[in-house]
Amino acid sequence: MKLSIIIPTIGRETLDATLNSIRFSHVTVPIEVVLVNDGNHPAAFDLYLKYQRDLEINYLSLDTMHNDFGAHARNMAYRVATGTHFAYMDDDDIYSLGGVETIIADITAQPTKLFLYKCLWFWTGLHVWSTKGDLSRNFQPNKLLNLIGQCFVHPHLKFKYGYWRPEWPHEIYFINETLLHHPPDSLIWREDVIAHIRPTGKEGGY
Image (tube, rainbow, N blue to C red; front, side, top):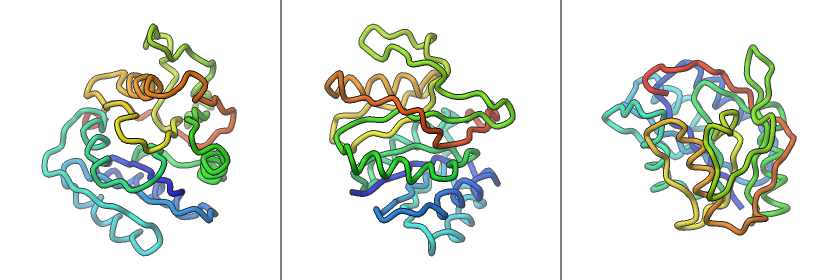
C-alpha cells in the first residue's frame, strides 16, 4: 500500500504550505509526492530541495508551461508515480489536519474502492462537494460544478483511470471517466473534509 499525491506546480510560493501539510501527516503507510514542475520554475525546484529529506518526492520538470489547468502535468505524472493509489493536490491548496490520515485509513480498509471527500473553500467556508451528483454515462458536467480533483482518490490500476483534458471542467470529466472503468458500487461519497481549497482563478491557466 502506497499513496501517490500528484501535484502540478507553476512555482507558486504557496507550494511551501502544500508540501508542509503533507509532511506533518502521521501515517505508517508510505506516501510519495509526485511533483511536476510545469515550466521549469526555479521556485518549485527550490522547494523540492527543501522537502526532499522529509518527504519521498518523485520530481519531474517540464521545459514548457502548458497553461492547461495542470492537465498535461498530471498525465505526465502517471509515467513516474509508483503508488497503489492516486490523490491530487494543487500548489495553492493544503490538506486539512488529519486529511491525509483519513485517506490512508480508507484505502487501507477498502483498497478497491474510489473515494470522493469534501473540501472546504478558503474564505467562503463553502463545501465542495455540497450535494452528491450523478456520475454516470449520462452525467451533465454543469450539474457538478462543485466537484474538484482534490476530492478524489482512486486505485492505481492500469487503463482504469481517465485522461486529464486541457479544457474546463477537466476535473469532472476525469472523475467521471475513471468511474466508468469500475463497477457502479465502487464509489464511496465521504463527508470528511480532507483539504482547504484556495479559488485563485486563472494564473497561468491553473
